[in-house]
Length: 182
Image 1 (cartoon, rainbow, N blue to C red):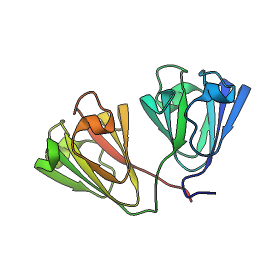
Image 2 (cartoon, helix red, strand yellow):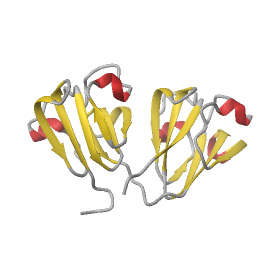
Image 3 (cartoon, one colour):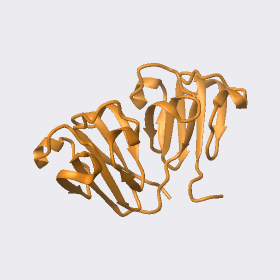
């Protein structure tokens, strides 16, 4: 089993009822596995997962850590559509991210090693145009304070503009680490 494997079970009905799909590793399209794109509850048995509301890892992102999610509101979704998922690419437990106000790693910068519920408290404006993720961990960036609103996953690597993490705008107001459970 690869270091990026885990197990997630998706259910068509609320409270873990109806047709189910067990996934271990990347799943680009639920329909290819005979499962429609309606997901109303989820059990994440191991690893952290990134789920997308469209097939082929496209659309709105939702990160789910191990636990039970009896209805779609519990994973910060506005509806029950989901089309693909994969384990979050994590390597260990050392977290560090640099956030830049301008593209191509320029302008004011802040380094974080811990969650930050309100980036303006660290002296940054609400626009984050580039980022570098160091170390082992992955990070979630949110458009609203206190880890709310549309979310974006950043795994280890360099992101020279907000479009590289699939954001429609550079408006980011909070950041948190994705916790890995080995």
